[in-house]
Length: 444
Image (cartoon, rainbow, N blue to C red; front, side, top):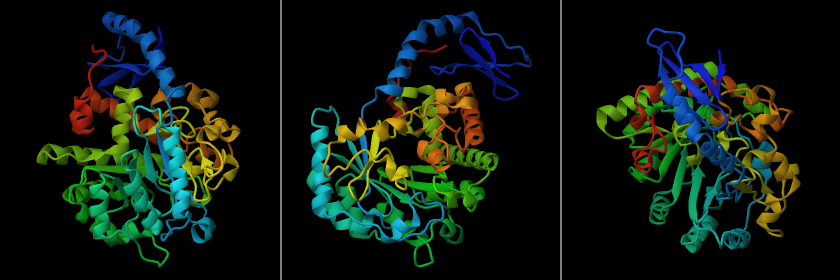
């Protein structure tokens, strides 16, 4: 299928388009077939490629290996008031784990501020993990105290979110992600179950309405076998609620129980493509955007590879490199997905420095998962668009260097992304604010 030609691969996208791509630096050009299966590369494309190759190679290398730490996830509690079947946190930890005190959280944030004192931009702090609002008071105190030095975000199932909490988060311009898997309570509550046996649908929808189109709000939906056939309906539902971004993240199978609810790769790809089509149609019809965030990140990985901020899809991924996670007991982990594998702790933030964790053997081990070390990925043309995530997931499956669990899904989505770019639909699939900030570096 792929014909190597002076550093570029020729890849069939569909019956109308062929792609010329340098897999090492993501230089690309779409070539119309015009009924001819033997598409040749025009000389001016080759000349443009040669003029950009060295520069793009350097950019990609620096992005892969020299990007600094810029985000820290803090898991202030191990516990959760939900019981999602695909959770990456072991169930015993969610039931019986510990919680940070206000003093411990403050100490961690002091360490973070100290680490970034010479940085040009304030780092992002995301309260994450099980359910951070179980320790709402200490989190809100921290946001109030440090909001001028740190950018804050919070991921929540909204079960404990109250209207006055929403006003507080809006006042301090906190990014908020609300977990909601489906537009229907019955479907949603199968995957977003609570410990009491119901689900978070009603509370999540109420919280979204309280936010009233707040720009810092997005919805995170975990795609699984229960909701995979309802993604387009979910886009319509969220668009009515004025949600600007929805993330349809494939369920991570870091813990074995997740395998039972994983959707088939091709089924998931078709469903997500349908959701993107629905989002584009709604955007065109109403003039109000709704963007499928994880698909938008694939587009960014193609048109501006080093502008990516979701660092799961580059190799090595951002774990223990551009981000890390602080667990409730202070352990510093490369990523929250490693919560169940404490052998990857790089030290404790209450006792040791962040830099020591970054330099630790466990963090270095996580960073050794690179496409060059994965047999099939090393030869894949999409290796620096997909990144073959994720190290914790593959470690949980028994082999850190096994190819991505969702390999076929990623391939289908990347081909579809190139197709949309060829058809000139870029303005409908990424946020207008992001597009307005971009300038062409090269163009054919």
